[in-house]
Image 1 (cartoon, rainbow, N blue to C red):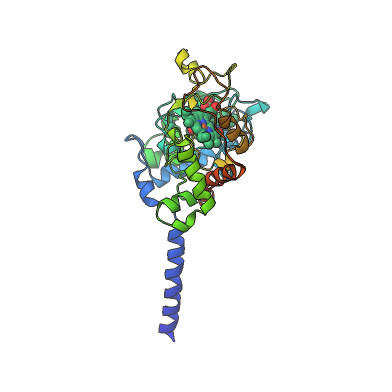
Image 2 (cartoon, helix red, strand yellow):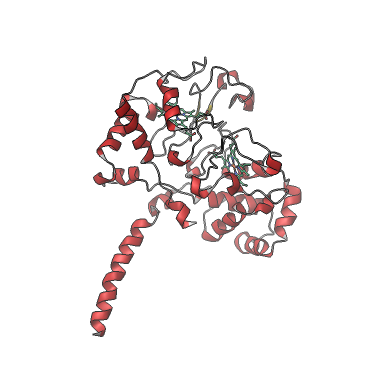
Length: 325
Ligand code: HEC
Ligand code: HEC
């Protein structure tokens, strides 16, 4: 009887293990996630970074945390045209997804900041976002016993800006999304995409020119390009503002299209509410800005082809990270 019982539970244990292993993130990808030599990943660091990411004390009036504008359930975007910081102030731009940010060689729509560590300071000190400054913020966070203790244990030092920026960046590097139906298909499961979705990928990559900039596997070439959004970019001229270089007018970072189902509204200013509008933009060949990338050319798609294209873009959805948080 005992043997039978052990055998019974052993069998179910195996099934449970197989099922759980299947739902785990791709560990190989995790191991190869780039992390700088001065900020190796470790679980205590990621846990501290996560606590800080969700802590409203990072904002001057204790109302806003990083997740206010980067919500896990919306692929770390906020669903708004432009975001809202302290005192109801509006930011200039749409909040980008933080998933797979570990792979970005440069961050922000101007593709100008070289590390996630450097980026952390920007929203904290930006008056329309968290409105704090590091000099007053650090003593506040140091006085939180769990933070000070973690800083001593992990970094062997008092809680300071180094600890803050390294920990949040390590947490961000742990936000991986690479277990979508598209990934399962690429890993050999031919049933992961329907015929329509496969036809959509062919349109995206062969009939059209999308993969020239939205290059798999992360669906970006990590460059700043002008996709002809406007004839006149008005007050936000993109990367131009970094060095006043007129050849960079209207250049914005090519965003990853992973989880694009959840990152609406689209573009740096959230000007398109739907993927239909995005496709309309490209189909008319862009607005015709003088620096518009020559790749952007007009095209026509049948209703069926459009539907297939959108259905393919939906196969890039993998929100399993949200359940793991
Ligand atoms: C008030 C809203 C708001 C808050 C709060 C906020 N962000 Fe952002 N975040 C944005 C917007 C908008 C951008 C795009 C800015 C740009 O490109 O000029 C952005 C960009 C980023 C990027 C660059 C991503 C990329 O793809 O280039 C990272 C990383 C990031 N934020 C992390 C954080 C972290 C960490 C915090 C908390 C310390 C935070 N954000 C707080 C709105 C916010
Ligand atoms: C020349 C490079 C280039 C090509 C080719 C290109 N894109 Fe883009 N794409 C961009 C850039 C740059 C942005 C961001 C522009 C901005 O923020 O204002 C963008 C943004 C997007 C977005 C919005 C994503 C988001 O989260 O905001 C979608 C969707 C998109 N492109 C789909 C496509 C499709 C579909 C095609 C093929 C028809 C295509 N792109 C071809 C450069 C390109």
